[in-house]
Amino acid sequence: MRTDIERFGDADGRDEAVRDVRTLIDERGVSYIYYQFVSVTGRIMGKGAPAAHWERFAEKGFQLVYGATANLFIDRHGDYIGYGAESRELIGVPDVETFQVLPWDPKTARVFCTLFRGREEEQDPGAFLTSDCRGNLKRIHAEFEAETGMHMRAGTEPEMMWLKLNPDGTPSVEGKTKPYCYHIDQFSELQPLIHRIIEYGTAMGLDMIQGDHEDAPGQLELNWEFDRPELTADRLTTYRQICRQVGREMDAFPCFMPKPFMGVSANGCHHNMSLWQGDENMFLPDGDNLRMPSKVGLHAIGGVLDHLQALTCITAPTVNSYRRFHDLGFWAPVFADWGFQNRTTALRVSSPDRFEYRSVDSAVNPYLSFAALLAAMKDGIRRSADPGPPEQRNIYDAIAGGKDVKKIPMSLGEAIAALEEDEVVREAMPGEMYTVFSHYKRDEWERFLATVTQWDVDEYLDILP
Image (cartoon, rainbow, N blue to C red; front, top):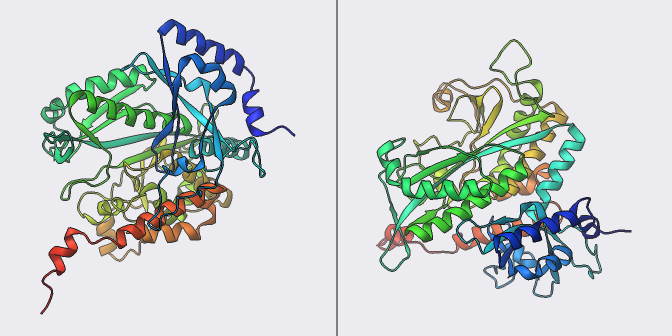
């Protein structure tokens, strides 16, 4: 029986694509290649090698310890997260179509890789590695399409903050601009950065469309066109890589921490999604109410609402994420409801052709979030889930008027518990993926609980007598 890695390597057209990359390498004078994948937290991991060995890596891949999918971190007890030191090594094989020359370093290229179990493993040799979040999303989306006849198209709104650097080159907690939302003058302060980001982004396949200055210090949002979720996730990962490079070049620090400042908005990463059958948007209204999504759209929204508690663990994945929900007054989407153009609810129908998932921030791993949202929507469609009527009022006014609305989890600990209880969302983390994610996040939560902070000292140092 042929293994996953054998079928992957024998895919139609792959040999020709490998040869085309060799031609590009020689024409462009590329001398080095990053073979990269994405860890459980969205970090870019991998190996580098001289371009002279392209064909060997394209055929056999590279090897790296399994724990690299968890950043090769250890937990507070000294154990490696997800995999022990006795574990064997994964194999990363290039997705040839993702090969791109880095515009800031034309001698270097990068290529995303799909991860597999080792060829000599006793259990499932050469099988897809289930802790490969990027590979999982591609497979989960393919399964969704096969079962429903529809595919997702998605876009993101990646907010982040440009911070000043200290004299020693470390980032300061001070934005490069004033917190003036949509202010063109503050936007202009960041224009040199923006020009370079767009230049690099366009060169790497991001169809950049618009941007603005948000209402926190140095807070910038730049957008590109929507696409299938696996492509959008790759582009968000590429965008983050671009921002880090631009920061190095222009003496600034690109901060994707969700909430570095109190009293101003946090860094969100709203997901805008629709479902398509071929070139037909299945979310568009199919009745007389031109604002009401189709039945398919309503069922998809219902599925997301039903699984919102568990989804929050994936889309607000850090201890710091929940500072966003507790700093009131900044449209933080803490209530499990939906409405038309309603920014006080977790889901917003922002246009007749899509809906916006708002309980997601800048630290999100998009491969995990899109996979989980696909699972929730598929469940909603399967069960014909009813999201209830859309809430037109400010949700705080609705609650004051007597409406009973459930909150999303308000701490990482609550969210971890919700995810543990939700079998549907956990299906989007197959095999070892949930083991790695759960271990990582439980350790993060426990380390936070075990840490004495400056707040503790200020609050309790002189508590008695």
